[in-house]
Length: 444
Image (cartoon, rainbow, N blue to C red; front, side):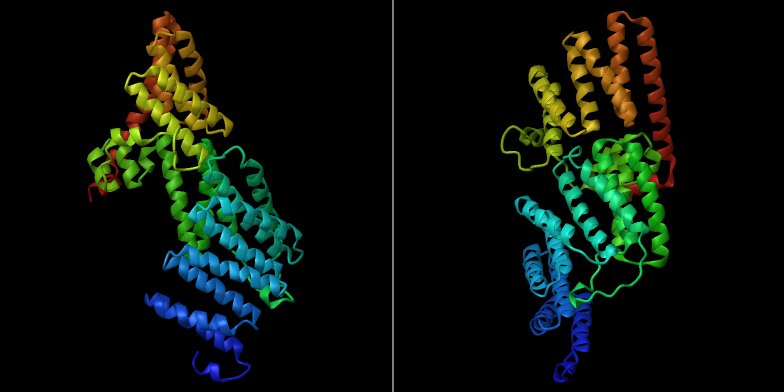
């Protein structure tokens, strides 16, 4: 790096040396030494578009990963986007802007995300160039759009974007990877290999299926993604693959717990709760939540701190559950009806099923058996579609008591048999889980 600065017309060596030296500093936790080096290289590389853009990306990455300074990283990406526009590279301008949009989503600056994504959408659609580069830009753009919707809990509204994303990855998989060198050196970048993009699309599909309560679909796509990851990891040690794997495993573990397969759910904290090892669960979550005061502070009617549709609907359900346990049934009904309205609007099926069965329980306690039945029957149908074993167990117990009160002996017997079957399945799974050697991990 120091020698090459004295040699004219030696830009590639000079800037590659700066880039590698900066990486070495970061690996040794000498981030403060890497920053001035990269800033100096950025300052003197403005006549070399490829290296100027690459060094800007690298410094923004350092701010993001090592210092968690997303504001500085966003500023640098904004500088990069403007530079790319000036040197006539709309492709790399889009990469800078999409990267900035990703960081703004991480910072939850949602008011800035929307206009930025709108601009990116226009740039991506208007750019004419290498088909694989264009489609990879579209995947990046659509992944951000889908995660933006999911972060807001808009599970139904996201469906058109998700469908576009899935079609886009199918298009990419049919394109050949023939190396076509762009005429503009600033265009010599690529977001992700198409194999990585394929796993990422599986991942966001799993996230959507989990939020919507399509657990069998979530399991199917998780299995496909994990199989592809195993193949990729034999040839590729990229850290992002491990990140994808961890997120997929977290989702599949939640699926297993909901569908009554604890023996395959070995994520420690959630697993402890599911097998009633509450002392271990408390230790693993590291904090004993004072539940009552926490519940009292959850108030979706006033000053709710997040904009997520899904979380706000869940907050109404939590308040309804609290009011039910306190015997304030009219208040509970109001909260639960609000939950139903919001969950139906965005196809939040698990929340809908839980709200219906709890409303059914309230009407049963109040002696309104007809209305109780109108709630419990669709709750049972939806829970079996998900499938959610716990809600099915709850619904069948309520149906048994409800039919018994109405004098429907045959229906009561059928519901009792269903309840017995669900209880046996859950009990057998519980015993199987507790007998596994992995169960001992929760005491470590």
